[in-house]
Image (tube, rainbow, N blue to C red):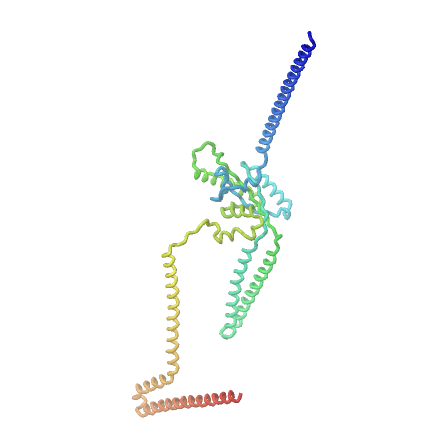
Length: 409
């Protein structure tokens, strides 16, 4: 066999061997990658299973309570009506100041409360800064009433002292009441001052304790109820559960109450707005009408009618006051005229009496008496005219004196 033929055969064998090695390597790498992928998928599935188990048995976060759709009928509605929540506010007790017997009683009551729970609950503690603005306004209004009452009592006491128509015992009693009212007024002002100073301290905190009671419509099982019926059933069930909790907590000397819709909104508002709760309080927002999404203007004619009614009422009030004042002025003028003519009226009435009794006293005596009355009248008239002339002369002298003084100056 020639050498060229041998060389060609060897080359073919080498090429076949290289191709086989390449195919074997490719198959090996493919099988290895497949095993690696299967192992990765299995590891991921095991991880997901563990994660699902962890989520199933983990304690729910309080943020699950905070997420809500709306608040109505003293309930928080979540997950499009698939969860309802009612909240009980609990009044804390001072456990450290109790005796051992009282502490044991509280502990036994709390154990009884835990044993009676047949549904899941959450205990939520919220820390708030104490807002004393409403208390301050209440104190100021009350002190204003006390101060007005004090002013009235002072005026009455001065009148009693100056009139001289009251006994010493009555005056002493009035002075005692006046002193008591003054002390009360000063005490109220001190309370306002102390409360204002306390309100400046933002570190004064207060803790509120809540028990969150949920209800799921799934507890009804298979049902054909609509949303309104489910809501009513949820309210009834939650109310029963909350009342049971309140009764069992009473054994621990802990008082509780169910929060209404406004209080629930305030609870959520403070939870979401920790920093702005003092500056933009919920009560201010409600008073300002921020809960109204829109407002419609009243009818123009109705508005004009109300304005006209108010104007008529005001004008009628002013006219009534004016006429009453005029009537009082007319009476005062008539009284003044009567006082000025009192002497003449007395003289005329006296003369009439004398004439009616002239037969009894005698005609001559009656005439002399009437003449004497006329003389007194003329004398009084003359004295009045002299008084006027004297006053005029004195006024003239005074005016002259003033003119001269001004001229000299």
